[in-house]
Image (cartoon, rainbow, N blue to C red):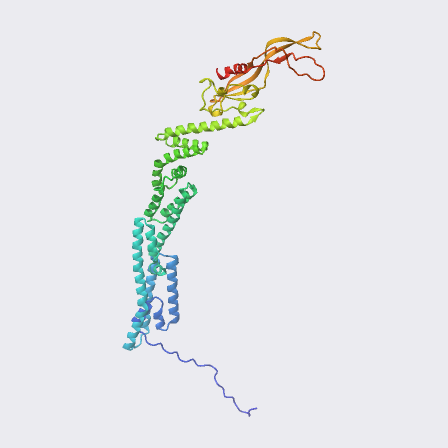
Length: 486
């Protein structure tokens, strides 16, 4: 323990800061020149590190906004004002802190400031000059409507051009976008030449987008459209017809289509008729008739209208003939469906206009097969009438003769010989109308010396009281002749 009255010697614990080393004197002009780099280098020369960092951050932020967001002149002016402000503030701040500076040091400082700012200014100036050169090439390409030339010029740009002249770069980007849209439109229009209406719609929509959203590229749009129109008509008239149908519609905002619409009347009529001809050759008569009728409806005074009218007639007749053949090939109740639901074939010869009236015979082949070949048609296309014959029935009596009958009280029985009566309907092929509804009576030989007949069971009750005559071929011909040779 210390003796009484002893006091501890105290030592202060507070650490004294070293005096801040004063920054060396800086020339105002040198600081202003260094700040001309717009990156705050002049503030660094004054030892103002935070101020230098803040200046650099503001500069980078403005450049990013100018390049990526607001690529407009007003923001470029803001950047210029910021540059002037930084230079002036650097001059002011250095002057406020001015201290005597050796002449040799001033020269070095100014050379340093110039070395920092001059490359920046020189690079920006050269890039702006190069941007102007590129823009001149792009403007020439826009004037000529040459997207290839414009794209070649724009390929020479890089990020520096966007930083040095953002507004001009934005205009050039519009041209790049326009050419990209036009390339895609060209691809769609090329595909549309195969008759793809969806691709045609997409291609024209691309042209409209360029005109509406990217003004100044009208010549490029016109050249793209002309390239497409010059390839019309295509080798396939039906493909051309699809294209002209779409182009000829009443579209809203026809700015793009004014020139295309003028082409339609020149190429559409021939394409429509030739498309009808191709469809006729492919036996697609329904669509062929629609094509021919389309020309008559849309171009009634065109030189091809008579040809189209003839096409309508031929297509209609082909449809009718196909329908008649179908009805004759299907059966209903032992006879073709035609016999109950006849249909016309307008190209056929009228009934009674020629002799014989060649016919297609259906039903009762026992007798119709015995008719002369010259009376028979081979197909509905060369038939005048369709004859539908029913089952044979007993007709008018011709003669009655007695025949021996063992079980008869008289020892004989009378047998009456009757004509063959066949119900017949005759339809005119040309109109499908029923022209004759009658019974054909066929005569023949009667009372043969021996009458053959069939009986049932073991008892012979004699021959039936009524039997058919026995027709010869001339008898059959005579019965049907009034129908074929009226």
